[in-house]
Image: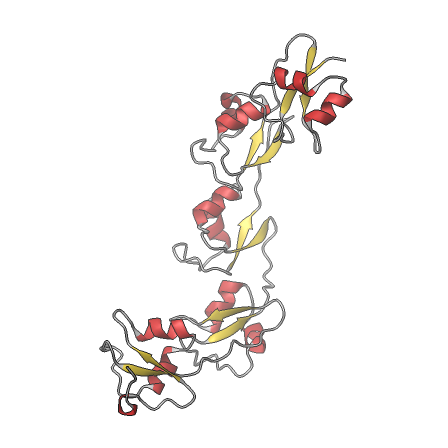
Length: 288
């Protein structure tokens, strides 16, 4: 049923919207990409604290996203934001923010307003590197991924709220000082890895992995975490020798190189997936 003109508020160049259960001016503003202030201004007489289901309001035309300099990102102003706090959060200067947003009054930022965040030029101290926060990041997960501690990250980033990391923010991360035993190799944890599966893959024992990685919890491995894989101690049958998989190796190529067959390699290496050989993995190869 069409709504009579008497029920429609003035809305030049805008669109009408009917209030639904659960709506707030903040949620409506976010849905249509406008600010709460613009919504209130377009609907004089509407009580923001008492929206009535079924009432028709005016949705002013959304302000188009700003044309940001190359490398910049668009950011929507939140409660409490200032150019100073944004500059610290994103690793830029207040001057750079002002230059990237001509016409924006830094002293009158509006919730829901869109601004440009220029590329970060933050210089992290020696011995650290920058990391831009991604969805799902926490200081705990970052500390595990980069083999550091939450305390060390906080020390390099004073003023950040560890419980409210904002996507796009730059953090300085201490460089890992992972010292592996001689003959060991670095390995980055992949999805599905466990110490048991890694021990089988690289021909070592779980105990050797634990010894080579003090402080690493085998039950809480995180994708991206770096660990040490100790030298393989695998004993191959008489007449064979241990071979460490190199980039590009396949069972077919190894069979040709060592004058044997793929079937023989498979028989000597039960449990090894020939379609998923890993660099550093140790297998047994028939002697020439």
